[in-house]
Image 1 (cartoon, helix red, strand yellow):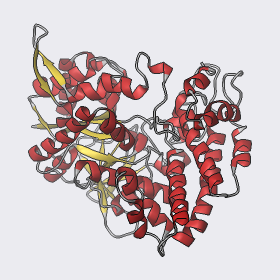
Image 2 (cartoon, rainbow, N blue to C red):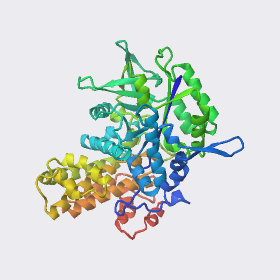
Image 3 (cartoon, rainbow, N blue to C red):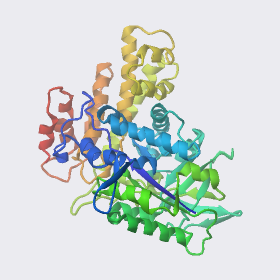
Image 4 (cartoon, helix red, strand yellow):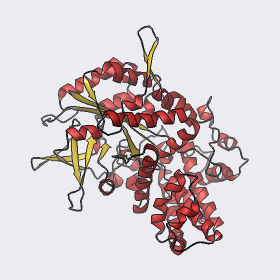
Amino acid sequence: MNALIIHGHFYQPPRENPWTGIINPQPGARPYHDWNERIHDECYGPNAFAHIVGPHGTIQRTVNNYARISFNFGPTLLSWLEGHHPRTYQRILVADKESASNRGGHGNAIAQAYGHAILPLCNEHDRLTQVLWGMADFRYRFGRDPESLWLPETACNNEVLDLLIEQGLRFVILAPSQAERYRQAGQWHAIVDSGIDTTRAYRYVHRDGSGRSIAVFFYHGAIARAIAFEGVLSSSRSLVNMFMQAAQLGLAGSSAGQPGWGASLMNVATDGETYGHHFKFGDLCLAHALEVEAQDFWITNYAQFLDHYPPECEVEIKEGLDGGTSWSCAHGVGRWIRDCGCSGETGWNQKWRDPLRVALNFLRDAAARHFETLGGDLFVDPWAARNGYIQVILDQSRSRAEFLSHHVKQPLSPVDEVRALTLLEIQRNSLLMFTSCGWFFSEISGIETIQIMKYAARVIELMDELGLPSPRHQFLEILAEAKSNIERIGTGVDIFLNCVEPSASLTHNISDAEARLS
C-alpha cells in the first residue's frame, strides 16, 4: 500500500508587546483583535474540531486533523494558544498522544527551532540556542523527546544538519530543490531540476567522519505548490486523485530514468495555515480527504515510515547562495539579507533588508560581548546559562533563584540576581530580533518588521538599565540606511522613533502609531 504523509507547518511570529506581554490591537486583522485570534478561528481551531459533512450538508462527525497529519507548531504560538485557547491547545497535545499510540510510539508532532530564525544566517551560539530551546519547548509540552525539528523556511546548510545530528534528531524535512546529489551502490548521481525521488528517505552523514547521520525526506514539490497556491483544496477528491497519480508513477517527482525502490511514499509539506486561513474550508477538505477519500493509502508519519523503510542511499544538499538554501527563496537565503527579488512589488525594492540585518547583528554582538564579560563574573558558563534559561521561560512558577543556583559561580546578592536575570532577558530579546518574518515581505514598515525592531529596542533599554554603554546611536546610524519604499515613512530610524520606542509606554496605544503607516 502506498504511504501518505501530509505535514503542516503551523506558525505565527510572536506578536506580544515586549514591555507588556500583551498583543496590541492589529487593525489589519479586523474584525478580530489581532492576527493570532483571526487565524485561530480560521485555521488552528477548525483543524482541531474538523467536520465530516454528509451529502446533504449535515455534520456526520467531528475529527481532529492533527491526529492524521505530521505537524509542528511554533513554540511561541503554542505558548499563546495555551493561554488563550486551551481547548485547541489540548486537542493538539492529544493528537500527538493518539498518533503515538497508533503509529508504533511515534507521535505526529515534531519540534521547531524556537524563534523561527533562519538558522544558516545565525552565528554558532544563536543557532545552538534556537535548536536547544525548540527541543526543550517540545519536551515540556508533549512529554517526550522530539524525533525531528522543523527548520524555519526549511533554511538549511551542512552546519545546520550536523547540529541536528549532534542533538540526536532522527530526521528532517526539506524541499526537493535543496538536494544536490545522491549516492546509490557507491556511485554519486547529480540531481537536475529538483528531480530528487521524493518517494523515499535518504541519509545525510555528518562531516566529522564519525559516521553519524540523519534521515532526510524531500517533499513532493509540485503537489505542495498545488495545495499552497493553486486551489487544489477546493475538492478533497481531486486532492486525493493527485496523490494517487503521483504515487502510481513510483517516482513521485524524480527525474526521468532514476529508479524507484521500497515503498512508494507520497509526502507533502506546506504552511499549516493553508488549511483554513489561506483557503477557506481547507480544514474540511483535509479532514474529508484523510477520513473518507484516502482509504487506499497507508496514512502515517515520517518516524513510523522510517521504522519500515530506513534510508538506503546517501544524499548531499546544496550549499546555496549566501550560505544556505530554503523553500521560499529561489536565491538560497537571500530573502533574509538582501534585495534578492523575492516578494517584490512593482516599483519597490527590498534594499532595506541588508542594513536591517547589519544593524541587528551589530546590536546582537554588542550585547553578547557584555554578556560574556559581565556574565563571566556571575555564571560558570554564560552560554550554558542562556541555553538553560528556556526552563524559566516555559515555567513561570519556577524559582529564579533555583535556576540561578545551578549556573552561578557563588550565591548572588539580590542586586546581582537582578543583573544576572537582566542579562538573560537581553539575550532572549536578542534571539527574537531575528524572527524570519521581519525580512519576508516587501516593505520595512510592515507589522512583522516593526515587531523585531521592538525586540531591538528592548535590548537597548535593558542594556541601559544595567549601565552598559548604549549601542543606540550606532544602531540607528546603520538603520538609517534602511529606506522605506513609501516616501513619507522615511527610513528605519523614522519607524524606530515613531512606531517602536513609543511601545515602551504601558499606556500607549500602539495602533495609533501604526496608523501613521497606513
